[in-house]
Amino acid sequence: MPQFFETITKSFEDVPITEDGVETSSFLEASEGVVKIFNLFGNPAFSVVQNDITGNINKVRTYYTANPTEANTLEKLLAHDKAAHAKPKERVATDALMWLLRGLKFTSMGLRNNLDSKDEELSVSFTKAYEGSLKKYHGMMVRPVFSLAMKACPYRTSFYSKLGEPQDVVLAKLDKWLKALENIIERMSKVFKDGGYGEI
Image (cartoon, rainbow, N blue to C red):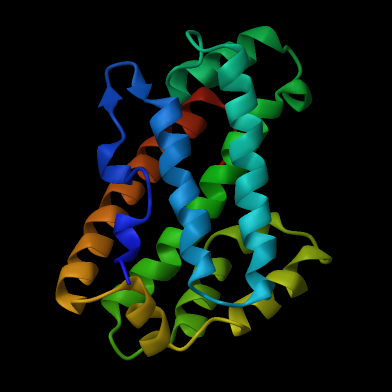
């Protein structure tokens, strides 16, 4: 069975970041790998997370496809969407990117918690991640759905074995993948805050 990181088409490590910002197309392709990682959880409860991330990837990609030059980096996409739509509620791409980054932040926090705490089960790591990221943005209807999904996390040993062997190689790849993702989230959180686009 191939290692998980051999099955994704683009790693966050391979997303170009230039003076203009984070390359949109590469970022979206790398984000699809996050959807795939939840397949390893082997529980339909996580479809709510996957559908949310996939839906937002598609919305951002639609905007990028319509404006390939003006939105070729995430930073330029936000500026273009703002210039094209005076009212914040009309900025569909900005809203979708904000929610996509929130979903990625939640995922990265859950995996980072677990990677750094060798004795912690995924359900604990992801519950902490949810409380520290998405929960404050969710209403009373959505929170129980996500809380249920957190309880449906696989056992630690089951998840890591699905990532592939040898474990030391796979865990090193996971760490690098996460660091690159965390770097993009940190960068874009500042962009959103400084530009008045919202909060990640």
